[in-house]
Length: 615
Ligand code: ADP
Ligand code: ZN
Image (cartoon, rainbow, N blue to C red):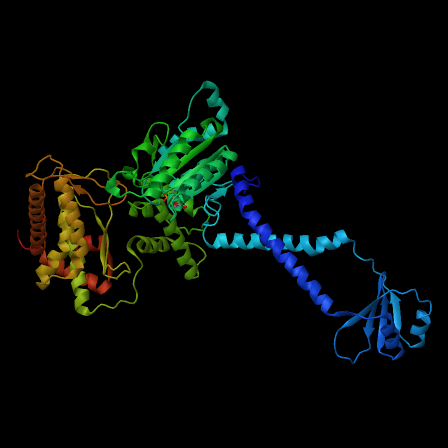
């Protein structure tokens, strides 16, 4: 990334280089000595007399005349590789003798290497080669060990994108968040404008929202709109097994970023390092050091240069207060789950490059997906496109979208599971129990679809209710209706088969959660009135709430909850008992068709074969 080495690093380098040089020198000297002695063992000096007699006996094949000696190659057949040599003697008859005995002879034509070059070759070159090999090895070793050899260098973990290529047009909805971020973009475009007046922009903004709502996407879009580099790192990347690594990564990140200012640093999952240092969440030296370093860097850098830190979390309540103090992440931008129009826009953004057939009604999909986040919708569209390809069509139709909706929201349809006839009847009555009780009450969401086709999520069937409009508030009556509907599955099993199955466990779980919230948070019980008995744990994940009252009160609240659930269950049971004819008729119809729509059910309710029992 950066070529220039910091001075501190150079010192470190020198420290490792000295012993290395010494070792390399020793190796080279030894090696050269070895080669020389080997060469010497292959050469034998003889007297000039012996040489002449060898020539005359025909024992010499060739002679090389060198400046200071004669190299004598003996005739083949003596087996060894030994070469003889003898000093030069001023012998005018030598040529004649050699010619007479048919000995090949020549003067060495190749220049002898100058001593300097041969020194280079023998000593310097090997050391250089060794050094290169050594540093290559170190590099690959440090890569394998995940940066443990090169402490503090976050090269492997920081991702910098020169240009994200994402703009606000790619982010559907989230208008409020975009508006808050607009100022940051302006600032990045023109830091001087703000500096001149003396205005200080916040150094960082915290994006708060559930996973998949598009926080990363928004941050990238800010970088894209401002046309500045985007540094991405995840909080969990900072937390390593070695104490001090996280802190030096933070230092390194800010160093690299300030070199490229103006730019954006995006820290995903900041809660991984920014957790409150209170003992409540457990403490950890490494994380604390990292957090301290982060705080120091945030305070230390000069915001007029144009470095903006965006951080994302879905657990703002766990963050250390120090992070949220003025001058740090004091600006909080909520990234909500999209409402109907947001979902529609998200679907439109993601279907931009997808061929849709005429029958596609995105509004309907948007309506059906209340509660889904942007990532779900992106996934839904992609699954639909994959399905269209699988089925050999060249455009996505509404059925693809609906099917992939069920897959994304309810898990894929399970083709392999075969239910026994009895199980099927049970599931059918269970689901119709939910649907019928929903239809028979006021304040309930209309039923869109009932199915007994098993899904991979484990649900053996389900009843899909679709709100007519987006709702943000729920009244007590509506919540009671929902509780009654949730418990009606079990009520149908009990009423028709006189038995209780495991199929209701999810319903019971949901009903219990809802009921507990009504009593402990929404002030909807007569017994406790307006007193809040629990604290909401986490608004953005469905975290558990914490009871916040005396143990005796908590026990009493549990009793109250049992009563509430009981009364709702009995209400469901009563409704089904009175409409037993309808229950049977719809359940049988569902058993035949496996999947029916809400409209089909309403048609039966309006024109039943058997009239309802009198109240
Ligand atoms: P987060 O960081 O909040 O967990 P991401 O930004 O990683 O969520 O979103 C994941 C994906 O979901 C994005 O890449 C994008 O395809 C899609 N997405 C989420 N929100 C939106 C949105 N508002 N508009 C368009 N696409 C979205
Ligand atoms: Zn159920």
